[in-house]
Image 1 (cartoon, rainbow, N blue to C red):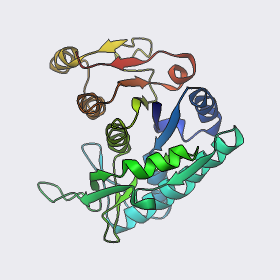
Image 2 (cartoon, rainbow, N blue to C red):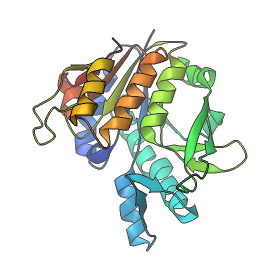
Image 3 (cartoon, rainbow, N blue to C red):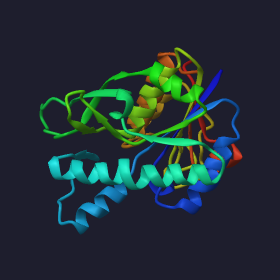
Length: 256
């Protein structure tokens, strides 16, 4: 059976009018569905309003105790329930989850090396059978970017990593397609030209694009996650933008 996993973030989840047609198109895909979302921009905005400093190192968020509270409020609260409510309104019977709910995603706090990231989680385990039971009951699980360590500690975890790890775990039970929905229309050959979408990228292409500086910065971990998922049994990974989910297109990532 097919399973489609959609990760949404960036401006998409800040604008329900933009998100709705994406979810409507996603619901039309044949098979079971899972949605994963982030919410970093809104978390930063709320932190600033509350007088909590936003700490970033190389684009990665430092999550101290106060920042974790904000992330949990925004990810597991506001955005998660907005997406669930929107799905219900368009015919998708959704259930909102963090990694702690049903003990579905376990993580550990990232060890301190050169940088102390605070309460940031690196994934250990996904309970595929528990998620399978939700899918079999015709629910659409909606996962936020909050996990836990099994000992009472919540952790802030990268949403792309959660999506990739879910796809990998569920690929033992389903034919999985993973969609990483960005602000851009896909992987671009020219970062200043939204129409310069590269239609297909394999591992050799990726190595060349990195060396030539075509792909860089935040796109690198997304592509790393994509190739890791393919290596571990995911059928297909598509990096796409809002229009691509609705109309088709984007960048297909393939192993060979």
